[in-house]
Structure formats: structure tokens, C-alpha cells
Image 1 (cartoon, rainbow, N blue to C red):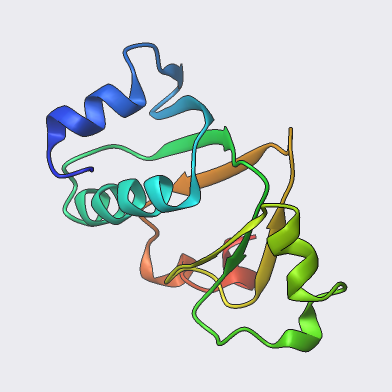
Image 2: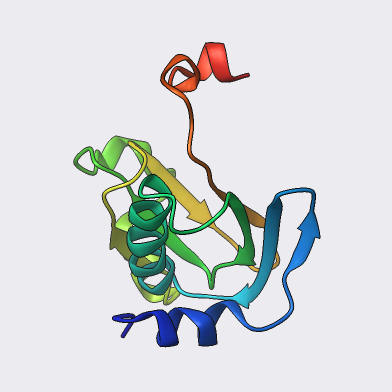
Length: 126
């Protein structure tokens, strides 16, 4: 369970890659619930300027992530029993909005950034 700086230090490891003022951390294969808990702390700390901008680089075990919206069964290209029989777990999280499938070897990048007010719109940010 992630509950302290010590736990987070253990998860992030001791070898970040620095690029200017941004750090990147390779977390290897990490479960969705573990990353959600980690991001909860990191985004709070970033908003308080306790940490710098960073990138989390990782992959998830095969899994389905459902964001803030309710799961719409029509979004699934196969019946839910297919995923259950394939041992592909379904996780609910507070981030995002829709349904995302994570597969073996997929690189996932989670930026932890403190955006200025004019950057908090995807069109303006890009």
C-alpha cells in the first residue's frame, strides 16, 4: 500500500532519468491500482510544488481500465465473459473517461505536470 514518501521512494527507485527539470521513472510492469494510488499522491504533491514535473513510464498487466464514466457494455468489442475467461481484470479509476485496454508490452506514459491556468485546456496545451 502506498501511504508515505518512503513507499513512493521504493516504487520510483533510485535511478530517475533527468531531462532539464523533468524526471522520468521507469516503473516496469505495474498494476493499475498501484499506479492510481501513486498518482493520487504525486498529483497532490505536484500541485503543492513539493515535487517537480515528472513522467512515469511503465506497462500494465493485461487489463481494462474504466474511467470516471460508467462502463458502457457497447464499448466492449467482445463480451465481458471473454475478458473474465482470459483473466483480464477490469479496474475502475477516477482518471480518464472511457474504456482503455492495456496489453502486454504496451508502453504507458503518465505525465505529472503542474499546468498554468491557460494550459489547462487540451487545445491550448498542445
